[in-house]
Length: 192
Image (tube, rainbow, N blue to C red; front, side, top):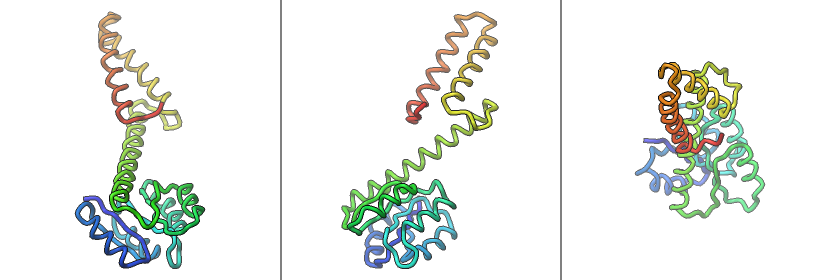
């Protein structure tokens, strides 16, 4: 079960959101950014709902700290402030999304789910890039498109060797491999 950390200075809102999300996630709560820092340090957190305005360290500054220590952790900002500036700053710092108070519970559930999915896809793409770079002998400084092209060249050479130089058999083998690779790239929605 994924862990959701909700950070807000309103204890009533925390209790309500704990009830809403407890059937979907393991829910942890914090009344301040300082308290949330301890929660994040104590164990794995999969997604954070973070209020922009908090006593002491505000939500945007806490997000800035999170980005340094946990760059891939999805954070959804909650904002009750009429100003959009702190929210825009949070988005610039890497917040996945934001939702305004008062919010619709179904919309909030959707936003949290979407943040988790986006973070999961980003982790999968990073792993695929690392595997591709490791399998191709690349050092990671090559773009994904170049890595795919180099991989395809190796596949062509291997197919010709296995087919004993018979180009038609090699082309059949290569075509199947290339279709599978393209299908997986398209399915993961990787932009080359």
